[in-house]
Image 1 (cartoon, rainbow, N blue to C red):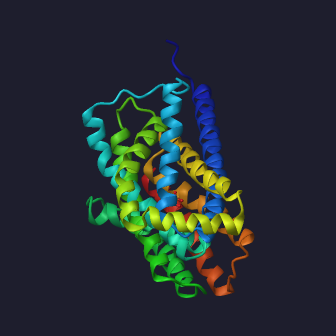
Image 2: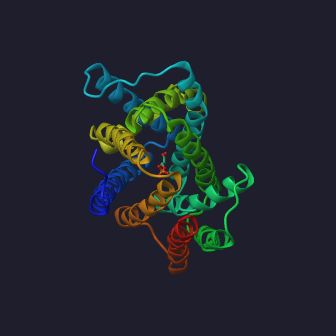
Length: 315
Ligand code: 3PG
């Protein structure tokens, strides 16, 4: 084998960056579409436990069919794989339902402003649960994130405690999900796409009984009738769109997790929220007070600052 020279190495690195850039752009665009349809559905049909279940069901179905038709090669898994996946699936289920419950109670933008605090949760979990320490500037960079989220929450016109707590619980659950899943994917032959497929299937099995217990078919049937009479038959397509786009954006994000660290993933995820916050405010004409927008801007700026600090500390 020829040794790789500096020039070749630079172009391999450039190609990798372009690939990650394409993943990120696709992930963010799919996520915006999911958030819009999810909220449209929740406005007419306020059953977040069912819509969360349908999102997982759509993903599971798409992947089972893809494996059966050999569009995608099915992963070779053993009992050990599913055992390692279980805590990830529990965290994924909790984080998903909590975020959806949050969005059923408050504006999409508010949920995502609070969810932009995820890096702070990531550092705090790493510090207090995993015992990892970070240099002082990292902790200092969390202040604008926490302060900005706090200011945005305090000045939110339509504040709702369940909406706020749902987003906070989702942050915590997803930090665990990302830590566990990166560990589970390490050294395994399962690709990001198949890993997320298995995660959807397991999460669907976990969530279904809870969704039935919390909401249940009777409430769903009544709500469905009302939504159809209010929106018309097109409502079905809104539900299909929110479910399918949920799967697609997550699948792409897991494909990018093959290439990047959980930390970079978490930063990319926070940057994604800028596009969701801005587009949902425009589409749903969400009223925003200047001080509220300032809080959101500080929180997002804090994430940017945090990403710079963490790169400088780790490199
Ligand atoms: C969900 O329903 O899982 C959330 O809306 C997703 O949140 P995320 O933007 O962190 O993926």
